Amino acid sequence: MKIFLSVVAFTMLLLLVSRLLPLPSQSIGTGAVPDNALPWQIRVDARTGQSEVFGLKPGTSTLFEARQRFGGEPDIGIVAARDELGNLEAYYAQVSMGPLQGRLILTLDADQETLKAMRARAVKAEYMESATRKIRLSPEDVEAANRIPLRAISFIPGTNLDDAILRQRFGTPEEVIQHSETLSHYLYPKLGLDIVLDTKGKEILQYVAPGEFETRIRAPLMQQEKTAQNPRASAREGS
Image 1: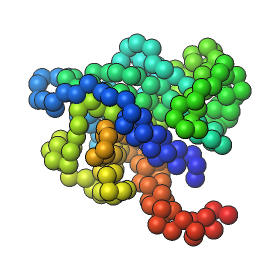
Image 2: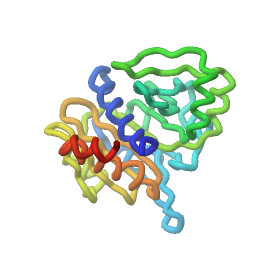
Image 3: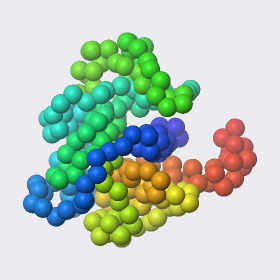
Image 4: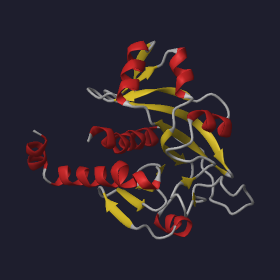
């Protein structure tokens, strides 16, 4: 289960970081922009079910394609909590999506063997929040990362979103999971989209391939809720 829980666990880390670091704010306008630049401009191929957002296809597009799209040099490394193998990620501190600006985190679909090998060749590790570490890759592994597909695309917009804006721009979510008094997940499985609405911080828009939405997003969220409601029973199940 950990391979699927990692997407949701990483979202929790993003929430913490988004509360600590300010972002430039903008209004959500309606100016003329390319038809695949804005967060709500999601295309879904009716034949294949493949989604496309920001000109990228979750589960198919590679980091190299993302770097062509956004330019610059993202911060690439393995982000890992204590006793976890971690996720291979590329981080842009600021990108422009039409008139919007924000942070972009690309989670790469590296398998466990690849992650273990990259960690063995890593040049150094540095602590982020709490016990979370960012492991810096060797130059050859940074190059190899360019060929790996994107498992998830996470965008933290600089502007604050609320329920009304979300429903106006993205439509009515198929499901809303209330994680806490201040945190809700708006689920759009047909778009491969999970929007984390955080009343105490910045929102997170997380995109995965629609065909992987259940295993990568919804099922881990439901398991997380089950664990929170009955931690003793969940501990027995995991033993």
